[in-house]
Structure formats: C-alpha cells, structure tokens
Length: 457
Image 1 (tube, rainbow, N blue to C red):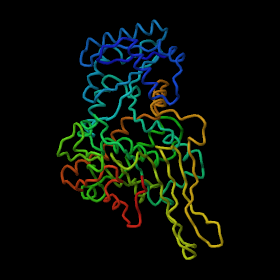
Image 2: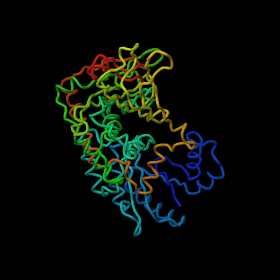
Image 3: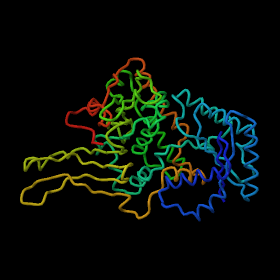
Image 4: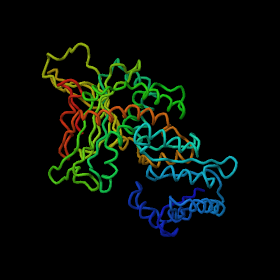
C-alpha cells in the first residue's frame, strides 16, 4: 500500500495530523461528503514526523522513520519526496537527504523521485545554480519539476485535439492563423501573505516564465514521433528555443506592464500586506512573441496575465485569418468577426469553435455561432484536480507533464532579456489599472491593429 508521511517543523502526533488532513479533505475534496469508513481505512497509512529543515541530525531520524514505517506496513518500493519548501531551503534539504542516503533506492528495483515546486530560480543563472545543486544529489530522471497548469484536463486534451484529429492539426499553422491570444487572469489580489513573494517575483517571473510559456509550447509544438515523455518534452523545448530573441527596443514596443490600484471596495497592490508602499513590481504583464519555425513564422503570439482583474479565467484563442474574398459583406449588416478556436482551461473547461452562420429569415444575414464542447456537460464523471493527476504520475513515474531542466532554462532565456530591459530603461512605463478591470488599455496596442482587441475576460 501507499504510506503518506508528513514532515514539518511543528510538533504533531500521527492522530493530530490525520485529523487535520480529514478536515482538509472535507473542505477541498471534489467528492462530498467524505466517506468516513473509507477515510478510516486510508488514515491508518498516514503518519507525521517532526523535521527541522536546517538540522542535519533530524534527517537521520527521518530516514529511520521511513524504514520503520515500510517494515510495519510491509512496503518497500518507490519513495517520492514532495519538497514544498522555499527556494532558499531547497539546496539545504537536498543535501541533507543525500547525506543520509535518501537519494538512493532502499532495495533493488525500487526508486526515488523528488517533486520540486516553482519558482525554479529567479533567472537563468539562479536556475542553473539550483539545478547543479540538485544534480549533485539526484539524477535528472529523478527530478520532477511540477507546474500544476500541465495537470489540467484541457491542457492535456490539447495534445489529443491536435494529434488525434487529422482535420484539426493543419489549422495550427501560419497558413490559417492570424494570431494567438493566451490569457491567464486572476480576479484575486495577493490573497493575504502572497504580497511578500510577489515583491520578489512579479507577473513576468511568476506566470509568464512558467505557465504561459508552457501553454505556448503545447500550442506551437510539432507532432512528436511518439506519445512518450521524452518525445513530447523534446518538441516543447524545440519551440521555446525557437522563440525569437527580443531587443531592448522591441521590449518597449512589444510589452506592457501594469499594477493594480484601489477601485471601489478593492485595495491597491501597494496597500497589500508585505508590499512596499512605493513598489514598482508589475501585477500585470502582456507581451508579443514570435516563434521562428516553418509552421509559425510571422504569426504573433500575444500573452497577458494579471492579478485583480475582472474575472478568473485561463484560455487560449486561435484567431483565424479572414476569407480571401468577402462574398457576403454587401448583402446585409456585417457583424461577423474572424473564426476562432477557444480553448478554455478555467473555468468551465472545454473548447468552442466560433464560425459564421445564416440567421433564419428571407434576408441573407450572417451572425457568429458557437460550436461548443464542455467537459462538465459531456462527461458524467468529474475531472481530477490538476495536482491529483500530477501526483499520481509522480508515483507511477510518468514525467510527461513535468518540466525538464532544459525547458526551464529555455523559458528563462526568453524572460530574462525582458526583465533586464525593464530594469535598465524603465520602458515601457508601469501603468496603473483599476482593480477589477480588464487591465491596462495600452495592452491593445500589442495587437497592432485598431480593429483588433483582446477578447473580454
């Protein structure tokens, strides 16, 4: 069976830990109510161990506790360490695990895997340093860098949509696509204690370098030769390496950065806990990137992300080119737009194809109509939460949806010049936008056409 051992600084008994976990399952589980009989059966395998992360001798006790639990439960297989620790402690924890031999399998044919949370460094240099530290203790195939966006059902379905449907993938190219919009918007601000972290990160590092570039890679990647973890991750790296470098002059034109200010009953970023009263950290970032591959040459990818916006939403929109000759424009009032494929990641996971159709009646009037697919409406069973899926993959050893180190480094190579240019030139200027809005109006200029706009949140 599977044993769960929680390890943290606080003093807790096994029973206290189980009670806390029971309350958490009752609060957050997608299947309610909690079946107490089933929980009692599971809870016997849940244990707790006090561990001070800066105390080397504590890790010897941890190693012994793991050995004892495996003996008492009759289990001695794969060990998965989930390191939910701040980046400054990661090196220390990894070294301590190595010193007590927890980086190696306890028995033959067993395994050790380590799940590491983002941020994976603060820039390319620190990301390399972090990886070198981890590789002194673990091997690359043992490391699972987790990005919960990749566990979402719709993100995974992108691969199926493109590569299991012969009619779809040809549309993902410069022949048909005018531009791509990728949006990850949050309606919340700093959610209590998050302000101190955001002061060191900002939207560019927090979201663009990780989630958004991963979404771009999945949209733009070529067909992998096989559906296995190595082939898929190779194609994602190829896309990220093909993103055209941005000069400081281009940064001023192709990026927009903003910070939310008080509006209505919402406080501004500078009033948040842990935030400097004169902070210039961006809570909104929008940018235009180009992927220099045969498939995507000349197609702009517009990315935007922000806090305290009008809605919580994450979506990818492929906006297709208009038909070469408008046969219907003179017949009636033309309210049509470009055809588009909308891939909704949150909320209401699913996808829609927006096309034009005729309004019933004697006149030739065309209007947009939506061919819609929703996971909630199409499947009776609820989708697993992203972390559920990823943790199961970590246990079974499927690394497809985890980040490889060269993916992380390729993403930092895209983001670092933008950050450096912002710091050196101060351009573009930080724009203040009201909390609860669509974000800075100036982001429209990235689309390069007064008749084009971001799709509403």
